Length: 429
Image 1 (cartoon, rainbow, N blue to C red):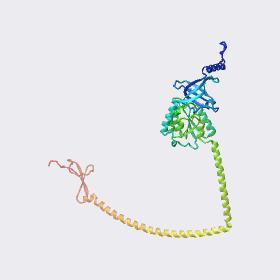
Image 2 (tube, rainbow, N blue to C red):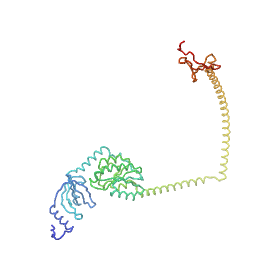
Image 3 (cartoon, rainbow, N blue to C red):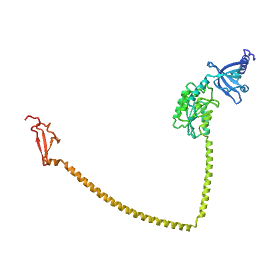
Image 4 (cartoon, rainbow, N blue to C red):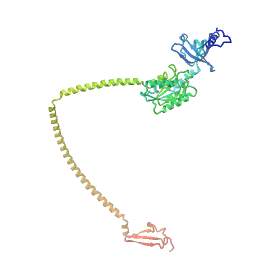
């Protein structure tokens, strides 16, 4: 163990950390601890790094490192949310001055509460059909505009923008900012997905976030977010976390990408690939066009060999045209004669029909004139009747109601006379 420096001298940072590390190694050379895995990662070197959370929910956390030799002896694949028991020693990571546990062995003692909730929610939503392959929609073959739902300050935005600028600069990117972590993140994501779907120019939606622990990514396991993805009218590509991170949003999306960069690569084909495909097609079209030219050239050569001398060919054509003209002239004369005869017959029919219709209309007109004459009031007056009207010219049809002295007019066939009532009905005699 490193001895303490005299009180008159100050510690250097390295010496202090070394002394603390030695003290921890002596006091906690071999310890066992239980907790919940969080943020588990395995580096390319084979070393594993993670945080062990207090299983009681007290909020305490311990940074841990498990080197390749010990990690190679694991009998299971560690993942976030699992309850584990660790055996190892406490040490100080001098580069950051952090307390850490160097893990020599790890055993599984049960699933963590958060991971259990993940599995329960996954089973329920899967039973509702939100993850069915049949409901997955196809991505647009060549989108011109894509909506990106992510944090405006996260690394995912930079990754997507950089990737599209490099691979598919023809794609316009509309950012719909959202929270991607914390208690308010699910509601923010739901609003952002709705706004992205309402974008009149967007043809697909990218839902992206960088990696993190199960707690960090928990907003993408929220049922509201999963349902919003499933109900989106636009296809959704979900690129959340790293390769090993799986969220319920990944399962509900129409396409799952391992990372935000992979999501940007999936949403649109690379410009270089499109240009290469166009070059290939142009080459095939040129070859086909050349083959067609060669084929028609050979056909023209064969036709040229079959041609007779120009003067003889022209004479034959002139003779054929003369014969055709004679046939056309004879047909025209016959058609004209037939048309003339048909017109004459039709003229006779029309004339007879017109005479008959005129006679019928005259007879009907005479009958109507006779009926009209019979209804003429003057004929009635000629038979000795009179037409009586009051001062307003209204007909007087009844004697009842006439007043003493009321002026009346009587009309006969040969004239009219004004008169006054002298003895109305009901008056004393």
